[in-house]
Length: 85
Image 1: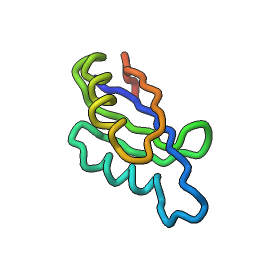
Image 2: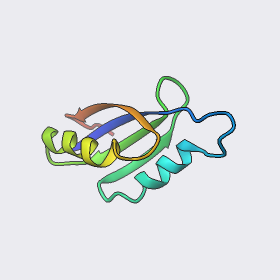
Image 3: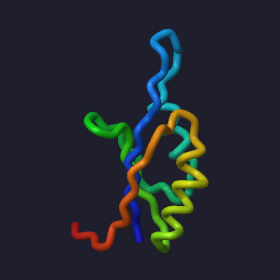
């Protein structure tokens, strides 16, 4: 079973010498359950696909692993119920 997490990032101050998207993507790539990480342009900043066994595991994953990463402002979470191609 897979889940999709769309992440919105905090915006650093103009004088800050940081790249939140790169920092967050690097942290996400260290997590075993993460199978895909993509930088987006549009309504959200990062797309993440994770392998989980249930909706409750997905919710717990977001709360304990994603939302604890610096620069993550908010998330939108979806459980994939069917894959095709």
